[in-house]
Image (cartoon, rainbow, N blue to C red; front, top):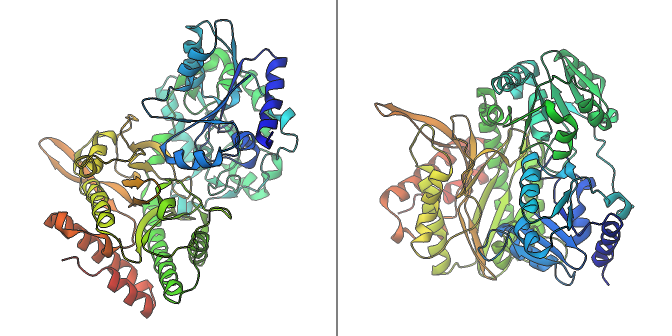
Length: 593
């Protein structure tokens, strides 16, 4: 019996004590976050799986884990010998969790969830689906503390202020705009659970979640005064004064439930049905007006100060990347052993030497050869591969600078690339260029552009399963909404001021992976009799590997795009580099013929 089997058996004992036949455990927290603090890593505790997207289902005789295509290979490796089955979410042959439960359980059975880790919409949809089969839902099943006896506490890192010279708008102004959106939805107040929304609204940051500078808290906003629910140990006099100036009171984090239950009965409280926990909405009861986040679109559209900061951060990031790739090449040329973890260390070290660096924006993905085919691979002591021979090295990395967030992927040739590698790389770049050069009418959503990135691959019967682009925060979470570029529609238009990634790829299991990513800014392009049209401005500044382009399958326009982009990279970065760095960059940005 392995460690994970023992833990799951402990969970089953708790299930039996409350007559629970199945339990669903999403990998999230009470704020429905993608990235979470140690306290909330319940899925990892029960399964050993370390990816950022997963949901477990445990019955009295089965344990299964659902995850998406980014983690199929990683999950297969990490779940091996645990007795936990892998369910490949998104494939036609894989049922979703409610369907699987309905097919497996019987009328009268009960499913348990912790309502603090399920969204309002998610809980309602699950309850409706189960009820159609006569299956009950118990939404207050939370036995983990009794099983995970050494569970870490909630983070206690201090909060600090994100200065106005970087944020570009003060907290009082943001609160007013958020409340105006709430009023448009018929509410007199609103409640925020999403940590990045709270950080943006109040211009505060912390270190609670690795690579996401957020503070564990809840926020109630009202024209009569607002309340931040946070552990008092996280406060400083400076932050208290900052919040007081915005008419924000501070109460202990643990008092949020009592506060929601004590609101006036005639209160009209807007709660986002996708970003607030069902358990909190149940406490607020009839006071709740269910709707969309009043913050998401405001946060996604960056102001001029944020955009200028991001452009400056991109320059410093580009400089750090030049020196990083120079060091990688020098060490390999000398025959020094170089591993995937070495690459990650080199990138972090050079970034940390840049002004305004705060932390990485996510764990660096440095996947060599077959590891590059694991979409969200992160090397550890067991998997850490030496980089040698002839293959591709995929590096996806980024940083949080106080004036902006970066995220870049480059695939580079180690040794001599094969014709197939160059062909596949060029197909990916053709899709990348198609997105970069797209012109689209106002109101266009990301899913309407997504096929443009995939078409060069689709024509050859190839594809990738992840999204083509995600929104990016400003000195905040590297993944943010509401906009995205993907096959499924998130119903959010691409608006001027939004920063989105452009990252098509291709992944050949046990061989190599390719991904090419820049961050792009939606900008106005033209106004005609048919209305306003938008396009993209490149923000990322670093060359693509010239050795991997197969110009025989590229159009003149595509070749010109590469040359123009590289000329701009050279123009902006060269003045910031030493002579050796400038020479290196000049060679890597020479024109494609």
